[in-house]
Image (cartoon, rainbow, N blue to C red; front, side):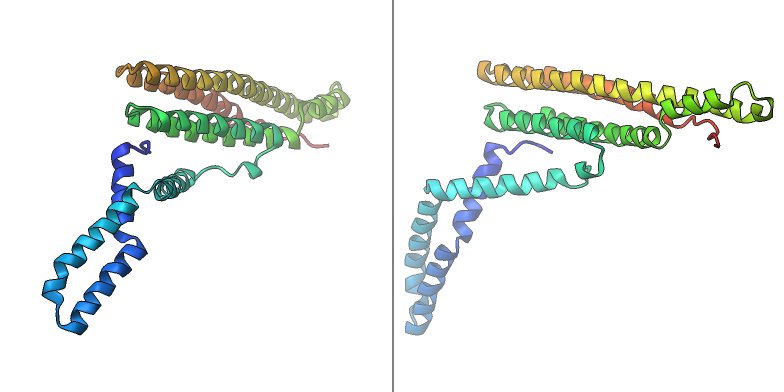
Amino acid sequence: MQPYSRSEFNRALIANALLSPFNVLLLTAMLIVGIVLGLVVPLLPAALVVYGIAATRTYFDEDEANKVLERQRGERRKRLDEGRLDPSTLADPIRRVVETARQRERRVRDAIERAELPYEEVSAEVDRFIRALEGTAARAQLLYEALSESPPAWVEQRLGEVRGDPSKAELTAALEMQLEVQRRMQAQLERFYTEMERILVELDTVRGNLVSVSASTEAAGQQRLASDLRELREELSAVAEGMSEAYEQPGPAGGA
């Protein structure tokens, strides 16, 4: 999703001025008067001039411009939110990670909107990064749920109860395998929390660099910032792959 550019804003202002209900009604009223009086042709140029003056006044009206800007930004935010992960479906610690990431995302997008340079590539990378983070969070949720259902401490306790009993040798083996898997999942979930904290700090650094680059009008900065975001996204992918490996290698569940 590209940032909202000046040219897009200008086109939106023009459309708003031309389609303003008051301006359209004014033109329509003058044309109706011309039809009733049988003076459509003589009145048409005057009607267009009056309509043009009204549209120009609307175009340069600051309050109207602010309304257009807010409306366009709202529509863009709505499009950005389509298909996003619902944080309410996540466990509290994972939900906090996603909500923090979205706060940082809003800061980055706000910096992009205020920048004098076009940052289409950076904006697109921000969107890809957040969606990748949400996908990683969804995988972390799977680990969280699996660990909640069979906590390693409980598996370890049960293992201690049956270990050494020859009649429960197979159960002991199953619990040992389950404990190994649960510990691996727990380690991956802890890695998720640690890596997310670091990555979100680095995302905030990207925002600071974006503001700095914009202030210095360094045109090459966009490529560097986009590259930084791609690197963060690749690091996210490594975390997600590690969690998938931990989750997709379950051992047999132990019985009581």
